[in-house]
Image 1 (tube, rainbow, N blue to C red):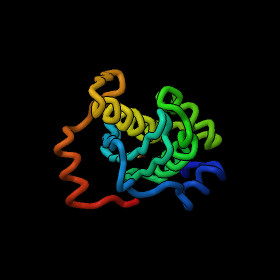
Image 2: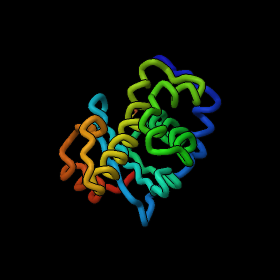
Image 3: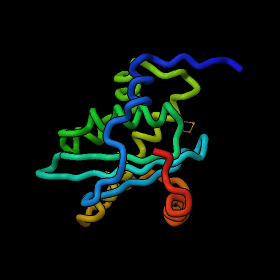
Image 4: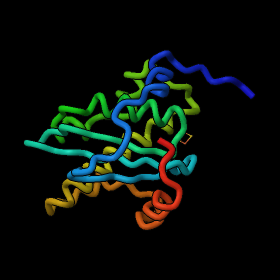
Length: 153
Ligand code: FES
């Protein structure tokens, strides 16, 4: 089996992930599943004056998912909602100095989790943004899976 080469930044974020956990007083929570590997991601955000002032994540994902989401939370904190929704997997992977190509789908889990959290935030204010509504497994199934097993991170 071929050994994957990870950048020092990926390894550092994997070993010391930032913003892990769940915000108790979150304004919105987004949960998504990765269609490629079946792993899951939950991102909770706090929003004040149209800015993301705090963000935390929990995941069942792999080392790349942990590193990319850790990087994403650092990049997104303090950004306006409009700036946050423009963040792409390319931005996050660039911040990590690259990912092995077979692991790029893991970075989508982080970005999709953020989009879903933004979708839920807007929805709670009566605004439906279908472009941010990431589809995956049913939300009920996702909630049950988290309750039964608990997250790895
Ligand atoms: S292999 Fe599933 S998120 Fe990376």
